[in-house]
Every structure is written in structure tokens, then in C-alpha cells.
Length: 176
Image (cartoon, rainbow, N blue to C red; front, side, top):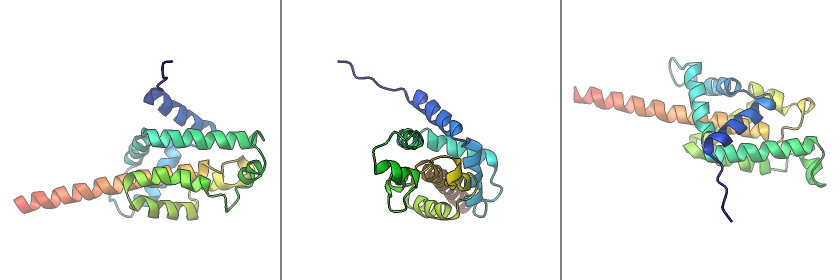
């Protein structure tokens, strides 16, 4: 029996499509990234933030986490999960934790700064995260954490790149 391999571009498109169906745009995630990094990166643009979000979304681990988490949120909205999992996801039970664990796979992609960014953004519920966390807008038990994790990872990616640029400039100045 031939094994089916899903092309990465197909999975990327599906992940972005699912985000948009759930009311989350790349621009909304980029706005969180900008919020997290504007104090640390001079002249940071929305375009740089969007590019970083897209780079994170192109990672297979991120796509897999999004597809899994969003599917579980959808099934919970449709009341298709077994009890007590159904009730835990519907109520975004504080001791559930699996949503955060899935998100940590994304946060970990760009080092320990991702953890601090994630914790900060998860606590603040900045931007689209506030809407996702509001129980009146559907079940987003996984999605709010996943979006926060993508923003944290994209923010960390920018921070690492900015630091490399600074180090390159310092090295060039020493050579002169």
C-alpha cells in the first residue's frame, strides 16, 4: 500500500484557510508580533512582522498543531466530542492544559525567548487573542493558545534576526 504524503504547500494553505475561517488573519497575528517587539527593534514594520508570521506558519510542526487544535475546537462547537472532553473544551477548563502543551511545540521553535513571549501574550490577551478568549465567539480553547504561540514564535524569530544584525554590525565596525 502506497503511503500518502501531503505536500507542505497544501497543508500551509489549509492552515491559513482554517485560521481565516475562525476569524484570524495573518495581519492580526502580525499586530501581536509588532506589539511584542516594537520596544526592542527600532523601525519595526508591519511587513517584517507579517513575513515572520508567514515563516512560522510554513513550519510543518506549526501546521500540524493548527490543524489538530482547530479541528478539536470545531468538533467541540458541533458537540461531537465524548464527555467529559466535550465539556472541558466548551468551557476552556483551566486545568485542561493540553491546549497549552500543543502550543509549546510552536513556541519552542525559536528558543527560550519564545516561552517568555508566549507567557506574556497569553496573560495579556492582546489584540485578536481577546476576541478568541471571549466564550461568546465560539469554542477557541486551542486556537487562542495556538495564535499566541505563533505570535510568540514570530516575535522570537525577529528578535534572533535583529540580534544577528547587531552582531554583524559590531563585527564590521571592529574590522574598520
